[in-house]
Amino acid sequence: MIVPIYQVDAFTDQQFSGNPAAVCPLDFWPSDDILQNIAAENNLSETAFFRKRDQLYEIRWFTPIAEVELCGHATLATAHVLFNHLKFKGDHIIFESAYSGKLEVYKNGEYLTLDFPADHLEPALPPDHLIKSLGKKPLEIWKGKTDYLLYYPSQEDIEEITPEFNLLKKVNARGIIVTAPGYEYDFVSRFFAPFVGVNEDPVTGSAHTSLVPFWAHRLNQLEFEARQLSARGGFLKCQLRGERVLISGQACTYMTGSITLT
Image (tube, rainbow, N blue to C red):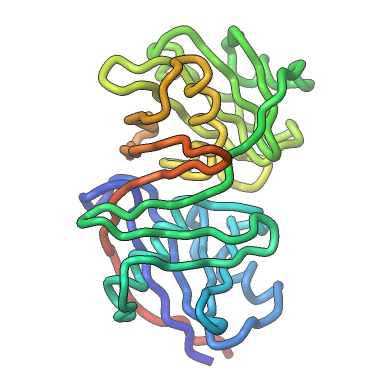
């Protein structure tokens, strides 16, 4: 069995920055074990698998150790592959996911825009190990569907956090979002997910389904320019539109190839 594979840097217009994702088009769904083994072999924060069904595309996302309910940068990368390598006609792609429902991507010039469901946050108490593993106490702690969001007063706080990942991975959550006001951007963030095998994700589209509603309430605005402050870094344009979050970014292809399954 031969499976095409593309590696795409998402939320950037330059190779070697943004967030790399593997993208694998499929004719049928193999076993979950095969999908997980491919993702582990790729050893990227996410591998996206998709197959065409009627007028839409079923999509799934795997870290090296687990399937996740939603992934922004790998969805952006998948749309990039469809538009740029698989000759998709039009400027609107509909994906269907088992856990997050219908997801749409629009092409507007060099930018691709994800249309994702907005997360709903509630104030939360810190779970065991959270504050100690980050080394900095936040001003506020919130909990969404899968992630904790921690609010800090300054960009320096976000830049200086050096997590103790062996301790942080004991926090039972997909990820930990840390965020603060930015100097050149409306807000900045980082995203840690050792519980699902990704210590620090370079640019996390799905985290912005939590970040955008949070900052919309705090700043009383609906449109944002955001920066994720990982080593690779990434830029996102975001908008809150009712119960949906629009997340826009660019992408570029790093590698194309094929996987031989025996």
